[in-house]
Image (cartoon, helix red, strand yellow):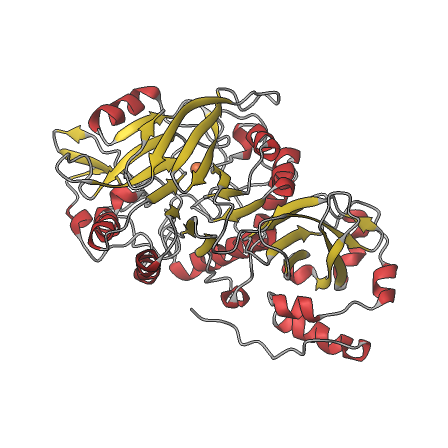
Length: 532
Ligand SMILES: [Fe+2]
């Protein structure tokens, strides 16, 4: 991956260095070290008087570690404050050990500017393992809401408990984000969000509220779409309540894109500029570490691995940026479709993750010492094909469209004698609990892993008619329901995984109550989901 060369930055600044610092930031707009190395002159802080609340998009935390967490906000500069766009602004971030904000344990001053969309990313370091912290930002006369976050345990850990909410797919137009309010009120360690955070497109059906503007293509348009989503109070509450661990799927850029190709077969060079704009806006709005690739948003690494002590290693995968193109595509309209008799599916060179990420994952899994190996990614791994007179059908956008890559992943579990692999996904707008076999639905092929897929926060699911066909054609699927919206609670202990699909039939009602649709368990040492 190409990374923009960044000039070396000193670790501390005097006021004399101010102009040089601003220049360095301009050259390296994504450099976290540049932001954090800067001290803010007191008069710069005092000078800023806001007419409107610049913290209307809220605060967030993410990518927790045992001693650090990423804290995020983005200043929303409205018309009355437009003059402030022209200058770098100093933002203070404070971290406290108590909810009353009396015991301050850290304070950072960082700079932001219009070039980075006024986004603020602070890597708060020097924290203690497995505890809550509270944080807030200040810019001139404005103070942000208070967020709460949590660090991970160290290994070896005594806590040996991980509680999280798995969520995905939040089409703004198709429902209220009441599921996020419910998640915010849960006692959790983290939220695991596996993609479709924004939607680029509109659907005239199920219109509960409307996107502002058309389909985004430019950086400014993607920023505006993200800002509209963060304008939702329930989503802000969920970010403020828990740290998030995240990956993306397709709608953060455009439906069913694959690598450098979109559905319209746009010139890759043109599409890659759009993708870079979408990636940059995404990183500007999320509590993510800005890695070495961040200087060049054409290629942004999001896949990551985190440890929850020795209890669980969690991989968050990117199944969009590096994937092979869709198999047997319609020459007029690309993207996923249902195919029968597509020989290309048998091509072992095809990959959903890209060969580099696949190798990185395999190596990590095979050397992991954690009790549970949690593989979180954007979509459903178990098969949803149907028997037809022309052969078994496959939807080419999901893992069914990359069956040899799926087989490699599952065969490695056998070859490396891995146990306790849990695959988590989203994207398909339905709750799914499934057994994962090297050969899907073949009873002679042993169950090697367990799968839980969460339904969407709001996005509408498929018909019950189609769901019934999928269930009857796929005995590996223990549960599949597309009719309700919500999220999935997952609790992991050394002895097992407990999950509950928390759902409501009507996400459009702001007072929706979330009930348990079904519960599935996975026992340590025994691959496969069990209803309870
Ligand atoms: Fe989705």
